[in-house]
Image 1: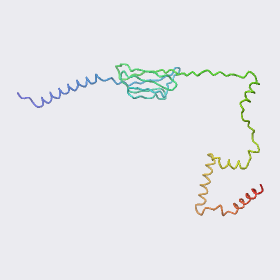
Image 2 (image 1 turned 90 degrees about the horizontal axis):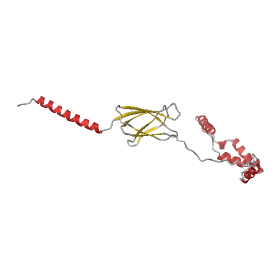
Image 3 (image 1 turned 180 degrees about the horizontal axis):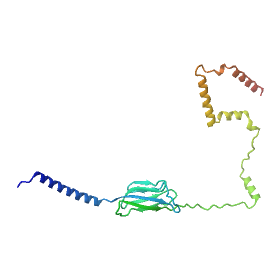
Length: 212
């Protein structure tokens, strides 16, 4: 009895399809269902959502953050444990239930994490005299204000040499350099040692120092 090659090929293809379908069914039964989890993060007394809340699946190593209106969305598996955390709020935990649909929407309400500080007692002074005695015992330096020592020329010269430029002075200095560069583009730069007025000012300063 002879069989047609086309019939043999069709039977082989049918058997292979049935075997592969059975394997895929068994493989799918061993996997957890993927669910698109979405939700809104709310506070205790807030109508709008809380932004910047972290929704994290520790075992899977994945997560997301709520947007500016408190909305989030991420794919999860059935049975996943989620950690919801934000600064100033207590951590919340959520377990993805067995769900017959491919998407799930939830609302999570966070509770404020209040930190209580120790009580500080302020002890006032019973009388003004006791307050003055305590203030004198501190031995605080007394500001004498502006005196003649503040106008010492050597001190002012030292302050002028050591005080750094602020933003305005740096800008003025850079603009002066730029203007000088533009002025000297078409000729040699002037030499201050060849300026007679500079020499005159130098000799006058020497005479003033000798008089002292």
